[in-house]
Each structure stands twice: as structure tokens, then as C-alpha cells.
Image (cartoon, rainbow, N blue to C red; front, top):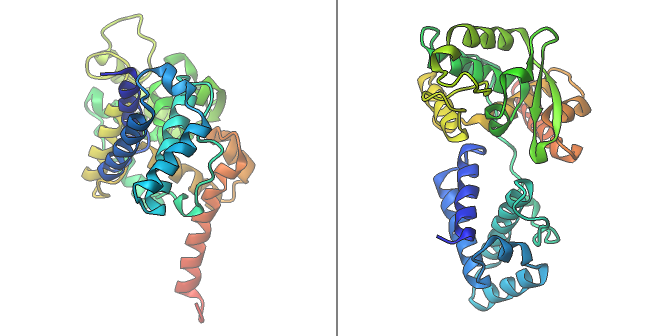
Length: 298
């Protein structure tokens, strides 16, 4: 397998575990990016680094000559942008050749969120009497309490949690550090896990990871995604729930409760407030539904 193919596999793993994308979407990304790699002849990380915007224009022209519809070409550009955004954030490349391409606004999706009641059912799904149950309950509580990404949660060390002041230190994209407040329920779930669960999973006394897998190593994003899905099914919510769903729900519920957009931006670790503004669209959708339901002329 070439280095470029390995990076594609890492990208698809990220999309599945971190973003919870469907198999159909993953298959589309796989086909589109393989098509791009075949056209450019990229085989190594250096080849991907050297890919230019001009070469992407040539690729678009080649797609047109092959008779592809405009929507299909746009989809390939979206796939290229997502792939290079991942490579850039993970430090595999230093520039994004797809950055200059403007994609249609129809590609921006309003994120799916859970109701407060569904969140409560999900957080109550893991058991209290096993190390894995205590771990999963603490992990779910932390995802919803902090809006952390799956990679951020899995990257937490024991020393990153300040129980006295109720804060957790998260390391986001490009290792950017931020402090996020943690509520009492999440802190209590963490205490229960640390006191009665983590020690039974621990195999190496020098392990600093907060959340441990069954074998004593740091919990992976894939395992976290599988556990969230398992508990969502057990709670009767459905199979489409993933760690990012709790991040979306965290932001939406804060704004619905009256939090200001700037504070939510800081807690999510968004560099640009326009990224956070998508959650105001979610809230407006909810308000529209309420208006239709209760207004005499809704």
C-alpha cells in the first residue's frame, strides 16, 4: 500500500469514528479521492504536499471531458477539500490546494441534535456495576458536558481534569489548548469511574490516559464511536448517534438556554465564529416548529 493510500485510510477512519459519517458517504469519499489520486499519480506524502491548485483545475477539466455532471464534479471537489482539511489539521501537509475552490452552500448541512430527553436516556444507558459501564457513563457525560470532539476526549489524561475548580484541559486541532467548564454530574461520573473502574482496567501504572480500553491502553476513537452507538441503540434512540452528535447537542442546548454565541465558540474551540453560527440555524428551526405548532396562524 502506498503512503497516499494509507493516508486515505486514516482519513476514512477519522470520518467514521470522529464524524460518524454513513457507509454511503465513506464509500463516496473513497471513490472520489482514489479517482483524484489516480489522476495525479500521487503515491507518497510528498506527492500530496506538492499537489497544486492548478493541478486540481486540470482534474476538474478532465472530469468535464469525461462527461461527469456538474454536481458530480462538485462532489469530488468537496471530497478533496475534506481530505486535505484532514491532512492539514493532522500535520501531514502544510498547505491545502483545494482551499481556493468555493463549494456550493447546499453542501452545508444543519447538524442533527438530540432532545434533552434523549440525551438523558443516552447518558443513563451504561451500567454502574462494571468498569466498562462506569467508563462509558463518564465518557458520555464528558462528551455532553464539554462538547469535546471524540479525539479530544480520547486524548485526555488524568491530570487534565481539575476537580476542585470544575475544568478540563482539552487539546483541539493543531494541539490548541482550551479550558472547558465541567458540570457536577459529569465530575461525579468521572469520580465514580476513577474510584471503581479505571483501576480494574489499568495494566501499566505509568499509563496517563484518562479513559482506558479493555486491554489497559488509551481508548481509541473507533471504540468510543462503537460504544456510543451501542448505548444509543440500548436507549432506543437509534443507530445514527455518534460522539459528534453530543457535541452538536451540547452547543445547541446551550444556545437554546440563552448562552451567547461567543462563549459557545470558545468552549467548542472554533477558530472562526461563523463555524459556530450553524447552531443558531438549528435553534431557529426549533423556533419555527414551535411557531407552527402554537401560533393561531402558524
